[in-house]
Image (cartoon, rainbow, N blue to C red; front, side):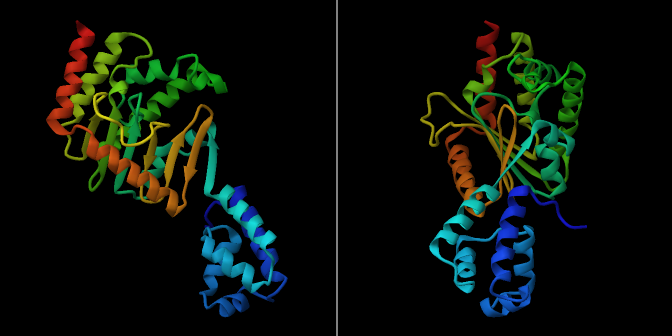
Length: 278
């Protein structure tokens, strides 16, 4: 079965194919000209693989196109690197964590500056978060659909107990204090974090307010070996460029190193909980 290709990838591939056909009778002929494997040309033309900027330079030179064509291909590549899915599409395929599991990702890394991520949420916290006026209801989610989302979110937490899998999560201290309903719900969530911190598969860290943030806290994200996932109000961006992945990996490592880990993180969570109870 052929992999699914986004419309943006398909447009880039079609344009590459059009340019190649103007100068070479077949993809094999172009591959020989460039010294590439024939399958590489085929994958690029069908959108199964994204070209690098150097690939585009070689392609444009091979078909003797001008700089305006190179600029056009650059724009198409930029659009193809950013894949966007609505929440309906995201949850139809199981969500971020499920896709990472299906891809066999051994290491999952997540950063959230101001909320607890779904992979470690309690049912009560998830329900209050997903039913606020500025949540899924903005895009038309019904109460019944939200209950389904909660059930799916809790089921995905089985990833924390899977063999040969590591999960690293960095929370901003603000995530420990922002609540969406009852303070008791947040307290229950903090207790859950303390319990999960003992899992061998989970590296849970907290960046204290007193520590200068080493990165701009623009938004939360999830990261695996093959993609970066960024949530928005209406859906999810998926970045697959190796350059993008490398940048987010460096940012995550800066956050991880600057944050409290182990018993120090647990102590901070418990201190915030005690202040909320006071």
